[in-house]
Every structure is written in C-alpha cells, then in structure tokens.
View 1 (cartoon, rainbow, N blue to C red):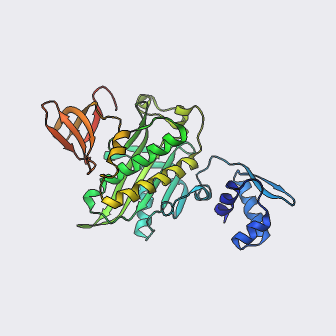
View 2: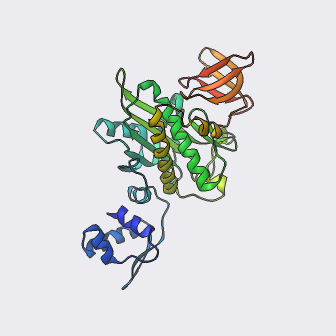
View 3: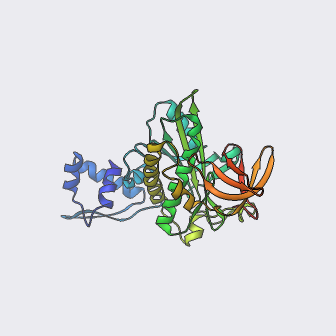
Length: 326
C-alpha cells in the first residue's frame, strides 16, 4: 500500500485527505497513518495538516520497491518489482526468480551489486547508493538467435531515457554500451535459458553509473557517471522509471516485426560509430573499416577498406574506435 500512497501523493496537486486515501484503497485511517509514518521513517518528507490531509514535500534518493513502483507508468514492464539492499548479481537473481515462475516484466533492483558481470565475463561492481543495477525478466516468443537484438532494444531505451531527462546527447556503442562524451555510462548484459528452438526466459541487466563521483585511475579515461555529466546527483528511481517506459515502448515495436526493421533508423541515429572508422576484434584476428550502422537483424555493417561489406554479429566480437574506446 505504501507505493500506492506515494503514487497518489506524488501526482496530487496539493493535499490529499486521509479519508480519500481510506476510501480509495479500502483501508482504515489507522492503516493510512501507519503507512505514512513508515514512509517518513524511510526518509520521505510528508506534511500532515489537520482538515487538509497529507502532502509530499521531498523524497530520498532511494530505489526501493515502493519508490520505483510509485513512479512506474508502464503496462507490464516492472509488473513486479523485487528490491534488495545487496546482491551478488541482479541477473543471477532474476534467473532464479524465472526458474521459480516469476512473470514476464519482473524487475530486479539492487542498491549494491558485489559480483555483477559485464560482457565476455568482465567484472562489474555497483557501489552502494551510487549506481543503478537492474535486470528485467522477459519471456519472449522468439527464436534464440534473435535474443541479441533485445540488448540493442534496451540500449535504445536507456539512451532515450538519459537524453530526455538530462539532455546529455548520450549515444550507443554497439552492441551493449551507452556512452557520453566518449566514455561508458551504462553497460548491458543479456542472458537466457533456451531449448532447441525457443527461449524459456531471458534477462536483460543494465548497470548505470548514476551518482559515482570518482573512478579508479584505470577507468577514468573510459567511464563517466550521470552525476559527473550534469554536475549534480540524479534521482535514480526516476532514471529507472524512464528506462522502463521506453523499454516497453521499443519492445512492443520490436515484437511487431520480430527484428530491428522498425527500429533500425532510430537506432542508427543513436549509434556513435556511424560513418566512423572502427576496429573489429574477432577471435581469429582483427580488421578495420567504416561503420554503416546496423541492419534489420541488429548486426553491425562494416565496410572494409577493400570495399567488402561485413555483417558483424555480436557474439564474441568486440568493436572499438580506431583512436579510442568509441
């Protein structure tokens, strides 16, 4: 009930009477009073005035279940929110919940992640209270080979969310990073459980550098945070809200065609490397070429120096700028 009260107070123009809350939620005034006091203890600033009701004056920087649920304006993305103070990995937790029958759209959030993983097994830790570690569980009707495109869909959602909220000009570094000013601000990792021709479930994990103020020396040239970009701390729950809003929008478009054909034009506008020289690193070696954006299958099109057009599938391939990270 706390998330519903928060949502009501957040969207109210002025005070909300306790009686209105009682009638709306079918509970007693004592139950409303207790819920409001619990919210106050959690850091919410709520004014209570006799004969007027309650008014929300301030919110803490929290990504708790109540705070996130009170903000979500989606139909199915975040239908269930599972919040944890500390997790080893939100992806690992989401997969466990999937095995236990959690529904499509379940969102797992951790305030601290101690053993998160990036692409190709890289470690990705999330310091407590400073970043966003979240994983969305999907049960798509897709063939397994199409799953990699959902990483691109999430990349679009995060990029649009950050640009709409903060006007940063973030871009996508194919296939799984969001960058600002040439530095990584978000990493995305998609994992799945499959049978021969079907996906049992799929989890998309996103790690967003939100309010991190300083990175280790070895990462300073490669990583950035929203706080660094905008000059002040950001509301992490609001970032999650916008990411889920646009993920749902783009995913619904993706489902219509089952590929990136309806999203390809917009994706390529977000892509940082279009028209730039890139270096493609494959297990068998590397080559250089000019990025021409993605095709409808989500593959990166790279024109080699001899004129041949390569269709680069994410897999174990890495793409870098010739003169730097992007």
